[in-house]
Each structure stands twice: as structure tokens, then as C-alpha cells.
Amino acid sequence: AESLLAITNCVVVFGFRDAIDVEEKGVRAPAADEASLRAAATALGSLSALSAVAVFASGGASVHTPWLGGIGNAPAGLWPAEPSNALSMPTWVIHTSSLVEWLVAMGLAWRYADAVAQPRWRGVT
Image 1 (spheres, one colour):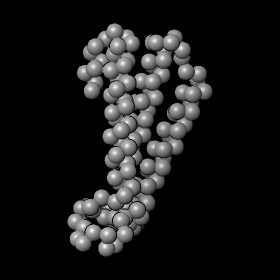
Image 2 (tube, one colour):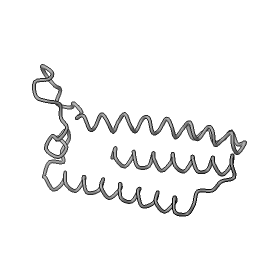
Image 3 (cartoon, helix red, strand yellow):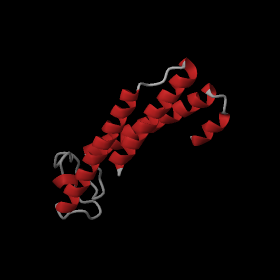
Image 4 (cartoon, one colour):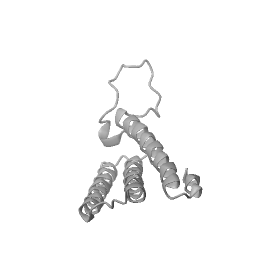
């Protein structure tokens, strides 16, 4: 779910960035850029789906089951007693990057509102 959120955040950021360029500079992104964005989003979505399939195929898709057998977990003994719901390092990375992506997207939404003189776009945030 987090990887899909990251993909959608990136698509929103690129979409607002291109829309702002059109409004402020009168420059439209080439069709090749749009096609490469679609291809990248499709590829990343496919990798997310494969990751989910790998988790379900391993038979461990219950709550707090280590992702792919614990890849990216902190070394054993790093903390005296790690809670059972502790997040792995890759999960923290994706949480943090998703937050940053969302903040950038919302900043671009405000810039777009100014570019098109429609303050209602700020309501997206």
C-alpha cells in the first residue's frame, strides 16, 4: 500500500509541475515525457503488485508479518526489546518519502492555484 501511495504522489507531483509550466511559461511537456511517466508509473505499479504476490505466496500475510522474511529489519539485539509492531527500515524509508512527496505535491497545488488564479485549488491540501 505504501509503495502505491508513493507512486501516486509522484504522479501528482509531476502532473502539477507540468500544469504549472503550462500556466506560467506556456510550455507543454512533450508527448514523450508523458509517455515515459505513464511507463514509469506502470512499471512501479507492477513491482508493487509483484511484491504483494511474493508476500502472499510466502504464506505470511498476517498482521505484523516481516516483509519478505524480514529483509531490512534492524539487527537483532540493537534494542533491548523491540515491540512486535515495530516497522522495518524500508517501511520507515517509504513512510518518510511518502510524507515528503505529499508535502511537495501540496506546495505545488498552492503554486498552481496562484498560477491559474483559482484559490479553490488550495482546498486540495
